[in-house]
Amino acid sequence: MAINRQVLLAKRPSGPVTPDCFALRDAAVPAPGPGQVLVRNLFLSCDPYMRGRMAAGSGGYASGFALGEPVPARVVGQVLASRDGGFVPGDYVWGFMRWEHYSLVADAATLYRIDPSLGPVSHAISVLGMPGRTAEVGMLELGRPRAGDTVFVSAASGAVGQIAGQLAKAAGARVIGSAGSDAKVRHVVDVLGFDDAFNYRTVASPGEALDRLCPDGIDVYFDNVGGATLDAVLARLRPFARIPVCGMISQYDGQGAGIRNLAAVVGARATMTGFIIYDHMDGFEAFPARMAERMRRGEVRYFEDIVDGIENTPAAFIGMMAGDNLGKRLVRVAEA
Ligand SMILES: NC(=O)c1ccc[n+]([C@@H]2O[C@H](COP(=O)([O-])OP(=O)(O)OC[C@H]3O[C@@H](n4cnc5c(N)ncnc54)[C@H](OP(=O)(O)O)[C@@H]3O)[C@@H](O)[C@H]2O)c1
Image (cartoon, rainbow, N blue to C red; front, top):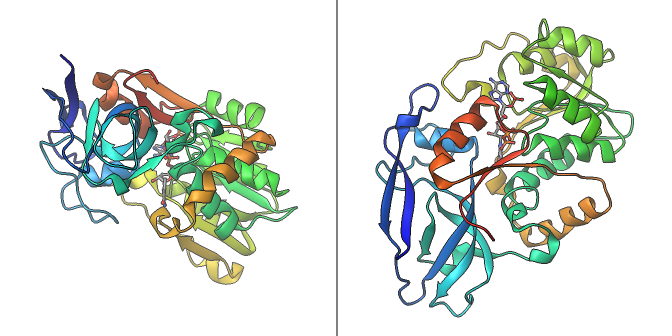
């Protein structure tokens, strides 16, 4: 008989997330009631925002996860049984489900059908889903790169950063990235086509690297990390620079960051815009085909970093927060 293995939030993190924040539980596979759908999960997402929701009394933009319950997350799966007229067994779907093998979806309106002709089904929660749309909104709608601009993207090899940089390249900009290992730096330049990149862990300082790679300053900074990197960028803005503030992962474990160069936004007449992707989901239905077309044209290549086995989900998440992922971190819990 099938067992529903689940990953529970066992303890709230303070500082970096540790393995004891999670526990495994084997539960019975639920049966769908009227209007419900049972999904056999295939891919579980690991996203940085989940760190904030695991913590108690999160001051973030979304409420905290319940202790002792499976961790909520975006998931791709296949309908196993359905008592909702909109879905039949075999349909590929994504939705907010949980880190577990089987999810019972009480409200079928929260499930979204995946068009498998657009690419691998995992793409529904990576390049053709939330991270992809985040890069599109941040770079194209807020960053607005133009031919000749110098664009800088931090966490450049990650789920969002790899797309943000390629969108700016397609717009004709010169694109520089930063990442946390030499292998990531090589990937960003040699495979993703960035013009140059640096390893922020080994350079003397982000400012030294930016002076070398962006000698005339920065027109667009797609901020994924905050902290010292953001501070260095602020001191190197070109007039009318745009800074879409997507995230500040260097501060998610509670580290404060002393920003000393904020006054530079005045002289540069710069715009810093924080954004949350949930505010930009109107018309999302058209997004997967639009991004798939960019991939077909060769403007965007996409890399996922897939870990196998539900019991490895805690380590996959903890590793992603520390930078061991090259591309979008997913956990495969069953074969499609
Ligand atoms: N605003 C929104 O709606 C929205 C939506 C999605 C994501 N985001 C944000 O976008 C950013 C990237 O998310 P993602 O999903 O694409 O994750 P990701 O880049 O695939 O993975 C996280 C990466 O962050 C980097 N990192 C970790 N600690 C760091 C530090 N102290 N300094 C610099 N970099 C560090 C690591 O790469 P390195 O090896 O390069 O350090 C790690 O691989 C996050 O800040 C996330 O919160 C925002």
